[in-house]
Structures are given as structure tokens and as C-alpha cells.
Image: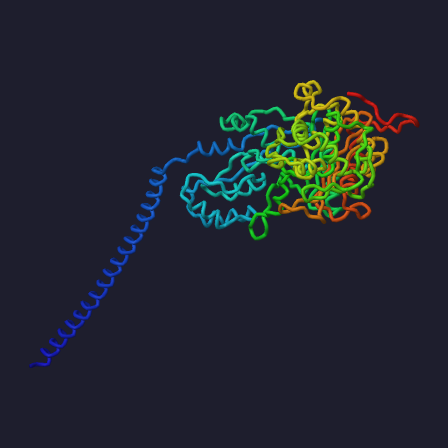
Length: 588
């Protein structure tokens, strides 16, 4: 082979090798590009699938909202109607006692809530003490409507609106407001969160037709005439302060008092402590439970409870004897020695151990002398007389929840004897005051009322239960005891206070406690022509004036504190008299 041929061959091989090498290189580039194209397609496919899933989810949610049952606005409206307007309550002089405030309440439509956790977290930044668990449960309930928080203030509403939470809204509501707080809580009562009356005169207003108007949706925007009460808020404040101070000073379990117009039966003031603030009828303890001790203040001892009224009942026993003609003011009964009857011994506290005139029986509060008068009248007459005075039957008045008196199923002689001095019959303090008014006003029993009542209206509803002479004699005895007896601690110079104390052993679990008293004082003033009855009670005092625990040391000073401040406000002019003036006048 020639050198030239060899060179040509080598050149051709080299060229072929170069061509093969280039071919391999191009193949690699082509494969890489293909793989990249495949990956790009996959990514695009994933993105498309993702967008499709999101689109389908949103579409499904929209379809779900479209097919969901519409919100029951009627039920919401019914709830709004339940919190409709109430009439203002004013006192006898036009002073505001209760009114409605415009508020808003927050609600949710759980079916429209997307993220309940987020909603709870946002609301908690505005609403104090929000119950996270309960709110979350409501938001996840799937129902059409749930209240989240009632009666928010305008600032809270604005802050929640700024959060921009879908699926929640506000409804206008009313909130009851009592400017005097606890001052007249047991007269006014209170309402629930739906503005429905639960206690006191608020409950009475509902019972008179307001609840029916609300159910018909006729009270939401309708101006309602104010309800005027017989209460004088000035006197009410004095009475409430006096009984609260007495309960604290005498370390008692409870106390109360009532001021009553003897002619019309109008309750001018009535208070019972412990009481409560109707603006906040319930309280929650730090552990989330209801404060039961605070709710004990709901209990109105003046009309919703019965007590053995002790020696105040001697007023009715002597009136009974006088009205039956069995005794007169000059009669004398033998109180020399105790009475033994049926295994019981009836004796006097600090007895005189001698015959007593009727004024002395009243002045010294003689159990023996009073029992003798009851025995003269007899059991049937005794029952009949107390029934006639309304002391054995349930009292009729506007306040709900009035307690029913208790008495023995069968009256025996021992029952009549003990009832004559206030043991064995339990009645409400308010109806005791009503019966005492009949002793002072000429013998007319006038039902109590918490609404204004004129003298003409009072005459239409009153019943004559005593002779005029009996009433005149009882005024004499009340004045006598106010000047010479246990009523001296209730005396207010210039107002001529008369009355009768009542110190009773308290009944605990069906037994009399010798060391725990229930004390009362029933007073009238001015005694020349009584216009008002004031009755005070104090339950289980541990101490009293000058260390005593009797009614003269506890209940009587309460009367003095009330009349001393309230007398001028009631239009009673103090009269200091002249020497030689008669102590008792006024025939009705």
C-alpha cells in the first residue's frame, strides 16, 4: 500500500470518528430536552389540577350555601319581640324608678361561618370573659341562629364591626335600667335578658297584658304610658337605709320595714334586707358558678314570708275583746299568777304579779292578761275576728309570691291562748300592718296596694271590721304604750308615735329557740289622728340598744329612725302642743 493510500484511509477514519462523536453528543442533548418538556407538562398539570380542586371546592361551597335552608328570620324576630319595650315605672311624684335603654346583641349564623376558631379568637379581643368553648360550640352547631352575647355597648359593637367577620350580626334590644339600684328592689323586682318581668311589679305589669302585647309584636316601637306606683322614692330610700343599718348594727340575719297610708292602704315604702341590685339580679363567682348567697337577696320577707309576730298580736286580741264588749279600758284582769294549761305554763316577762287594767296589760305586754281576754271571747270568736282582719288568709295585692299564713288545723284552747300573744299563727309583716291600720282608721280594713289609690277608691274596696269606739280605744292604747311603755324607744318628738312591740322566740326546725328572737314593732303616727302605719322587723339580732335583744331595743329604734326623717316628707307637721292638751282626739 502506498503512503498516499494510507494517509487517505487514516483521514477518513478520523472524519468518521468525529462524526460518530458528534452524533452521540446530539443524542444526549435531545434526551435532556425531552425530559424537561415532560416535567414542565407535569407541573402545569399539577397546577391545573390544583386550580380545578380549589374551583370545585368553592363551587361546591357556593352550591351548599345556595341549597342551604334559609335563616329563620321569624324566629329571630320572635326573640327580638321578646326583648321589646316596657313602660317606664315612676314613683307617686313622677320620679323615674325603671326604664329601658337601647342596646344591641351579637348573633351568629353558624351555617355561614367558615372558620369558627378564627371567629372566636377575634371576638375574644373585644368581648371580656368570652366563653371560648361555648362560643365555639355555637359556631360549629350548624344551626341557623345563635346568640353570642346579649346587650353589648356601642363601643363593643363598633370594635366587632371593625373586625369584618362574616356570618355574624347585631340585633337591637332593650335593657332594663333601675336608677336607684337596690333601693326598691323588692317592690320593683327585675326582668330577664329578654326584658320579661320575673319579680315584683315588673312581673305584675306582664301579668296585666304586656306579655300578650309582646307576643303579638305590638310593643317594639310603641310608646307605652308610664306605670305610676304608690311608692315615694324619698321615703323608700330612708326606709331601706334604716333597715340595712339596723341589720348591720344589731348583727341580725335580716330586717325589713313598711310605711302604709292608713286611709288608702297605699304602700309608701317597703324594704327587706338582704336585698339585691335589679340591674344585676345574678352574680357569677370566679369559678363560673352562680352566687347562691347573693340570690338570697331575692327573698322579700315583708310579703313573701310568714312569721310569728309575737306581742304585736296583743293589739288584735285586746281589740277583739273591746269590739265584743267583753272588756273596756277600765276593765281589770287578774295577772297575779301564771296560767297552767295542757302541760304548758303561761307567764309574763317581768310580770307585775297583780291585777292589771287593760292599758297596763298593753303597757306591760302581759301574756296572762291577754290570754284572759281571749278566753272571754272564746275560740270561735277568736278565729272569726282574726279572719275578719285578714290575718288568717292569703293577702291580695299586686306583688306576686305572697305567702299564705299558717295556723293550727284544729284550734284548741291552748292554741287560742298562745295565738292571743302572737305564737301559733304565722302571717306576713305586710298584712300585720294592714290589720293594724284598721285599728287606727276607724275600723276599716283596706287592702294594700302598690298603685296610687284615692280616698274615694279606698272607700269602695274597704270593709268595716271594727266599731268606731273600738278603733278610738286602740288609738288610746297605742298612744299610752308610746308614752309610758315599750314604745318610748320609737318616740319622735313632735310626731306623737304610738305602737306595740313584739318579741318572739324564733321558730327553727319546728322548735322555739330560747336564745334567738324575731322582733317587730307596729307603730302609728301622729296619734292625735293617725295617717301612717310603720312596721319594722328584725330577724335574730345578736345585740341591740343598751345591749338588749328585745323589740324595744332593736325594732323600736328602727321606727324612730324612719319617722324622724320621713315624717316631714310625708307632710306630717311636727306639733309640740301646749300644756293641758288632750293626748287623744280624732273620731273617724
